[in-house]
Length: 113
Length: 115
Image (cartoon, rainbow over all chains, first blue to last red; front, side, top):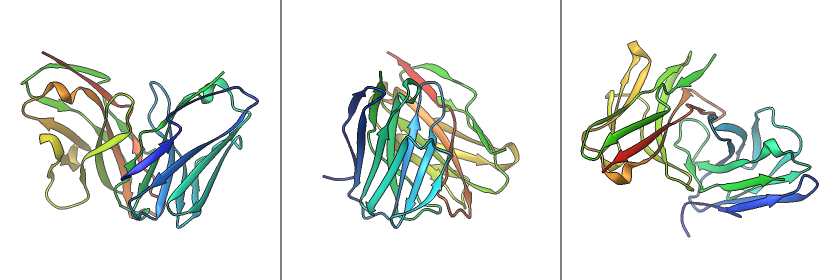
């Protein structure tokens, strides 16, 4: 499989559930990103990892917890979410985190009930 | 404050007609600029990018964009639109140099193509 993959593609969860989103990149990149895409709003950068180290946390609430065990995998752990957290969550990767092009996965459509 | 504005939320063009999608940015540093396209249910696909050099850049699917520093614009163009071009288009800007990889995205323009 090539490019950036994300699982699951769709997720419905209650506010008390704990779930995780997974992202895997097959491009040999060193930087990975989580974005949130809500209806009628620009994409919002959430987290950046470079060589497994978090380099950016864009004031994201603690109910979102990222994990990057290696340069190919990125997780977003979710707990006690709110309905307003319903959105498309996109993962991206790039060779480095400077001027390099970011390549996006298809996203996980999250609905919080 | 850093920002990207795509003034047109929704555009409808006839198949075969020309297209121009507008993008204006406000960024204190030297910008690097991207156009991405998103089809329904899909992630973002890179159409083209500008880092430096020739201000007219060519991308995939017959798209091109022109960087105009004096107007802080990076408009996307295509001479003849195909029905498969119907999608949402995002302009994004980042800074050179950057040690965060942070991109600022516009709100997007939805393109509808009439037969």
